[in-house]
Amino acid sequence: MTIVRLPSGEQVPALGQGTWYMGEDRSARKAEVAALQLGLDLGLTLIDTAEMYAEGGAEEVVGEALLGRRDEAFVVSKVYPHNASRQGVAAACERSLKRLKTDRIDLYLLHWRGSIPLAETVAGFKALQRAGKIRHWGVSNLDLDDMRELAAVPGGAACAANQLLYNLSRRGIEWDLLPWLRERGMPVMAYSPIEQARLLRQPGLKDFAQLHGMTPAQAALAWLLGQEGVIAIPKSASTAHVRDNAAARDIMLDAAQRAELDRLFAPPLGPSALEML
View 1 (cartoon, rainbow, N blue to C red):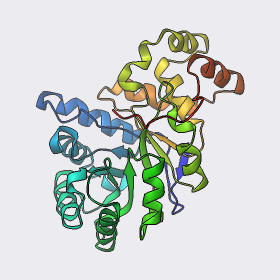
View 2 (view 1 turned 180 degrees about the vertical axis):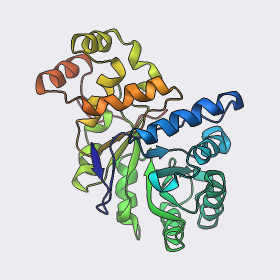
View 3 (view 1 turned 90 degrees about the vertical axis):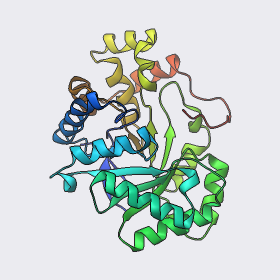
């Protein structure tokens, strides 16, 4: 199985499962739970969620999917920036734990940069670690300047990951942020790895996938999985799509195929502002 190492040395799957937009419709709950459970069966044991997603609804879906199976999963959740004070992050974590029906979160992320000083958020994360509520902490949507600032605060160098918008059509981080993270052994968690399905409708990718005997989603995911230190977290509430995604782990793009994708989706030619969805 394709794996990625966290800075601690712990190994996690390079292909996980996202949950953005899950938990918004009660009538979809059964299908969402089934999709996550099938993913677990197929080894997609890293599950990413956030208190923001459906205002806790996605965490409830994850909690239901993990009943009796918690020890199989590596659970990632995220705290709102306005909840990321020393006391606020403790309270937010307790609420997430209750919705997730678990006693710990494996990786707890600051969802994006807010007004609360990074040093205070890190202190809150460290307190949660000491209490056994979280195992690792990290960030999301922080650009290179943010990451340099984070590294300079007490304990900031212990950041375990940065979750970023990264896919074939969003390659800006390759210019400076991605190399900086790689130098420090800090993985990128690539959210929206198929651009919320928009990539799947891109004619060039469709032609590429057909030519090489794969689906467009598999091509987009295989491109990410072939890179050092990148974790992809596609969301799917369909068991068919979960199986399709899982099969991307068996695809190894060769140099010619990667060059072909570079022609279709050009790498950055200079620095750019961090993209977010």
